[in-house]
Every structure is written in C-alpha cells, then in structure tokens.
Length: 321
Length: 136
Image (cartoon, rainbow over all chains, first blue to last red; front, side, top):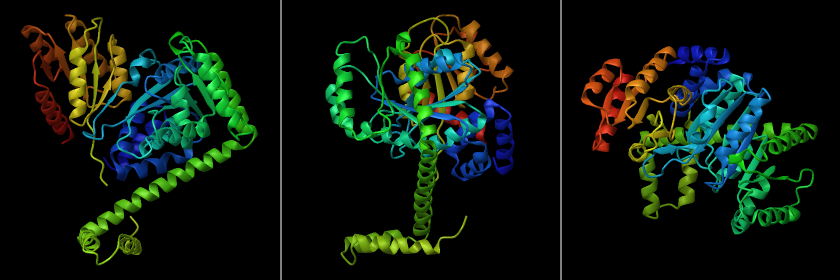
C-alpha cells in the first residue's frame, strides 16, 4: 500500500464507492504514514456535511436515538454517515463495539454508512482517526454525519470540536448525576434530550436541567430540552426540528464559522502535539539520550524542569519529513 | 508512534435462534486478545452481515449458528461476499455443525468451523495466523 494506491482509493471514494470509503477509514486508523496523504487529498472536498454529536451516559439510549433520527433524516431524503465510538480496553487494547445492534435495520440502506470505532487510548475519546473519518464521510458526500461518543468524562467535551450541533442525552432519575457532571455538559450541550420519557421522574429531570440552564450565562441560544421515547420513536420529529432550528441559528449568527475555525485549530494542534512527541521520542531513543537525562534527574544532577527544557531544545535538530 | 494494526472481527448470529451465549463468550475472548469486535446481536440477515462487513472493513466474519439452518445461511453469506467483491474476508462458523456439512462448507469457502468446547485461545491463534498470511 503506497501513495498510488491512496490515489486510486480516493478517486473511488469521490465517485461513491463505499468499499473505498471503508478501506480509507481503516487506513487513517492504522497507518500514520498514509493518513497524511489521504487527508491531504480529500481536504478540499470537505465542508458540506452537517455534523451532529450525540453523547450521554452508557445505557441512556444514544444508539437507539441515532437509529431513529437516521430514519427521520432518510424519510426526508438526506444521506447519513454514522460514527459510533466505544472505549478501548486499557488493559488489552481490544474493544467490543456494539452500537450497531440498535441500528441493524439501517445497515442495508444505501443512503446510510455506519462505522464503529474504538477510542484506542486517545485522550478525550474522540481520536484523531475519528476526525479524519468525519472528513472522509464528508468528502464521500453524506448530508449528515452523526457522531455517537462514549458518554463519560472528557469525551463529552471533545465532540464539540467536531460537531455543529451537540446533543446530550440524559434519562429520568439522573438528578444527582446531572449535578455531578453539570460543569461539563452545561457548556457543550446545544440540545438536551431526556430519553426514556415514559419512566417516572421525567419531569423532575427536566426541571433539574431547566434550573441548570437558568444559572447559565449562555445568552443567545438556550438549549431546548426534548423528551423522547426512542424505542417507540416518540419525540424524534421534534428533535430533528430543534436540530434544524439550531442549524439556522448558528448560520444566522456566523457561529458556524467559529465552529469550523475551532475544529481546524483543534485538529492542527492535535497533530502538532502527537507528531512532535513521536519525532522527539525517536530522536531521543536513537542515541539513548532519554535514558541518560532521566538518570540525571534520579541522581539529582538536574531537576525535572531543566531536563524537560533540554529535551525541548532538541526540537531544533528535527528535520522535515 | 507506530500504531499497531488492529484485527477487526464481526460476530453475528444469522437466522432466527436466540441463543447467543457462545457468541458473546467468543466476542469477549477476541476483545481480550486485543481485537476490535463488532457485535451484531441476534437475528441478522446474510445481507445485513455482508453489508456490515463491508462498511466496518473487517478481516474476519464469525457466524454463530445453532438452529440447523447453516446450509441455507452460510452459503448465502459466501455468495453475497463474492457478489460484492469482498470474498477475501475470512469466514468462521461456530455452533453445532454435523461432520458431513463441515466438509461442504469448507469447500464453499469457510475457513474453519469451531464446534462446542473449542478453547477460545485456539480461535485467537487461528485468526492471528490467517490474518497474518493474508497480509503477506
């Protein structure tokens, strides 16, 4: 697999070949040296898809919501790409990716492309490969791209970087949990979904969210709270309606340009960070210098900050690849 | 850092039987061996399985069948793989398959059949070896 093969695959992708799309996603996941070639070739074809991020606690019904939302989009003639992200086991590096179970009926719909990805230890859950996969689905021509992420911790904040509209899913009876995670979700949610709205305490959950929003200083867009029963398809039309409303809002207020700027910045800096580390490490490991520097810290000949400064000075010796 | 290449596997239960403990145990064992396992759950059609295999770009398709319908379902999966030009996927079958059918399925293109009681590390070893051979 070399640059010529990448050319052929990208050409096939742009002419609508889903096998090429699938293989290119595999390559951006597995082959760092090809990733750059791939993204370089497709970047100018991106920027047309509308990206929706969905996050929430495990078991809150995200996958079912994505399934139903996709059905609604398809009924309106829109094509949909779905990226379902599940955690990688930190111990074995393996993963069980089960989100597709809830989307089975969509797997043979030509207008839908579903890809499961694992976080592969990337900080923040939404790995660099996921950003690249979004670009690939975009270049492929999908109208909507839905990114479903593991709903704990940092990952929730990460989807904002990729999404035009971020949806946070909660379920009734999560009152205390909302309190616990509010610092993170308040800032990122453009829309709240209270799923499983046929359960008890749904109104208490809605009220807890409303109170949270009352304290927020987000002024131009107050995140709507939508009640859904995803398994029965209840509330899905309303959800799509507020997504469209949010879309109109960010377009009118030029927020959409800010989103694109932010996404690009995050991607570039993310690449810089990991490339720098990789190359620096290679440089250090070649001469066994890292070992010497660390030993100096252990033996108190130098301190950790001075040691790090010495390493950073090595940047000047790095060459263009 | 060179990221290592992850082996990707689908575990699916084609047809109508609902007994998926074996499939789940295999899925976990493969995950614990560092693979990415796309678990498709119950009652998949051959069409859904093959389309999922294409979109997920998996190396291996693991089919768990206990219903006795393997001579209808497995050949259909193999046929669809050929039709879509993705017959390079390694197809494994788990479940209760009579010896006479085993031979026929292997002739049609199934890489291996794992009956009840197969140690999971044997499957892991088999998958690693076959995926490795395919890459060379």
